[in-house]
Length: 248
Image: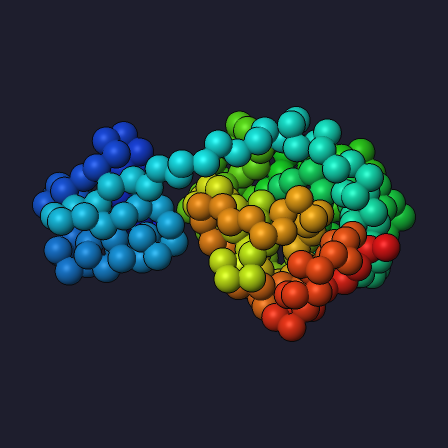
């Protein structure tokens, strides 16, 4: 059995039972204990589970993330300004990843007339791109109802088929020590993968995200350029760690 298939079986059983024993996973996958231990270590590193004595338990994140609709009505002017600036980095002929989110969605109107290819995990963004007749690839994965995003291990595996010039991501927290964070480990995995697969990655964030930490770490600050509207002292404090582009 391939590693991917074992991981899928392990995660499926965890979603059903919340906790599983090592012996049970050995019988389920017909793999050795050492192989399953490595699988659990890998899945724990990706934020899916927590290893416990004799098995593993599903990670339950404590935060209640706002829905897509709730986010859409917040900081609208700031999001549009950030999105407009971010879109100026995109040139004809580029391939681009647009992460699920309301700020990244605000970029779509500014792509009008550009000859680009877009990869996304967002259903609303895919629909908007369709209306503009922009060539679009939607990754697979589990559809998360609250954010209308495709997330999880299968989403990550789908993303591995692509390499993009630029990736634009939304985020929930920007913190000097914690880096870029988001509430859901499955969304964090997709965001982290996008950063890894892009030649250049951008985080789009208004100042309501500064100094905040969410449950799941996506990447350190230096992994992506921060695009924001504010020039507050907090932004100046992180400029020594990461490149900051002001949208003003």
